[in-house]
Image (cartoon, rainbow, N blue to C red; front, side):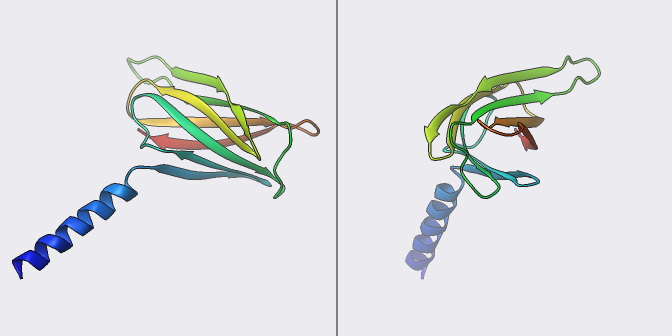
Length: 128
């Protein structure tokens, strides 16, 4: 019985650790949908995130994507900000590095500028 319990505990722990290794969030604005992912959980410091962008249920060809992560000023603390241009990986996927200077709730604005049409700002937030 003890052996069976140990085996079950090890399997449960292994499954939990494998599932806790990634970050995923969907951000939407009207007909724009962005899936934000990271291979590792987001932490204080530099983080690499990937985004899958769809406009009107289609992948935008040749769009430019930029990301702005910021934390507003609070009493006794100045505002913090990290901006970056995302690199296209093809097929609507983009990758960029963002620096979260401290723990807390960070606002994220993703600006998608398609070749034709208006640029779109999609807002979201993450807790570090």
